[in-house]
Amino acid sequence: MSDLPRHIEIHEEGPREGFQFERATYPLDDRVRLVEMLAQTGLRQIQVASFVSRTRVPQMADAEQWFARIRRQPGVRYTGLWLNEAGFARAQATQGIDLAGALYFYASDAFSRQNNGVSAAQMAEQQRQWIARYRQAGLQIEAAYLMTAFGCNLQGRIAPAGVLRQTEQILEMCAQENLELPAFYLADTVGWATPAAIERLVGALRERHPRLRIGLHLHDTRGSGLANVYAALRLGVDLYDASVAGLGGCPFAGHASGSAGNICTEDLVFMAHEMGIETGVNLPALIEVAREAERIIDHPLAGHIMHAGALPDLPA
Image 1: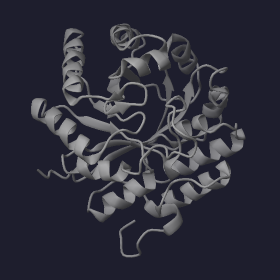
Image 2 (image 1 turned 120 degrees about the vertical axis):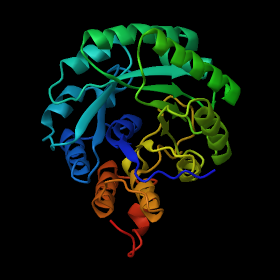
Image 3 (image 1 turned 90 degrees about the vertical axis):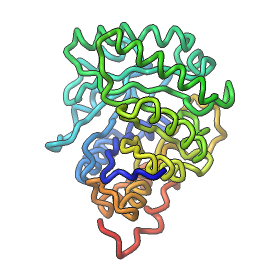
Image 4 (image 1 turned 135 degrees about the vertical axis):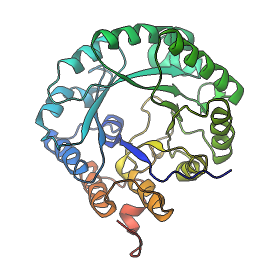
């Protein structure tokens, strides 16, 4: 089956993913500059920072100041991430943020307990409260994420049948709450996905719910990130999270140091353009941003195109 989309939508997560993952805390001026450069590439959504524990993730302690310093580009959304009521309250009080509601579910009970201190079932039930909370705040819920949808370092491989069963429960909950999801993300939170796993799970999900817009949040932990994207593109998936220069990763995943992070935005754009798929992104400009990210981080990053350059006969 091949159902290539004509255009894909990319949500950039490099600033939040990258600076949160690194152990060092980088100067605010550098972080602001990277976001402003990304906004000049044609990307339409940039996740800037997370509103999380300042003690557990000190790299994000000044999220409010970071948003306030950014010179906004028309047509670009600058979003954030929060995991609890305290984080949401901080985000609501922040100048320059585009608030967007999202729901979070976990296929791995062990990872949910480690990441949130509650079981996957408890986390799922809490999402009803988030639906009410977002509605009270006048926010649209834009997506639901099913985390660790392909596997987990704590619990092992996640069976597709279990993911499909949980997806049905999530969609039933949304129906009970009179909520139609604009997008449903399968998140490969700790890098267990393979092209075959993508074909099995995405293919089965599309068969059951052909009108459901599927998004993917993929990591390149074992080097199969773009192969996973290719498999998903052939199934018609047109919505991806990515990180410039391959920044980021899950700080609580338990990987060895040096493991690659999220799929690389410029590598994804390069491959899409080579396949004739539009992205709306200026690839040469994005490559320059990736190189700037490596200068800021001050150690080699995982992107390929930023080092090798794009092919000269490809469209920008």
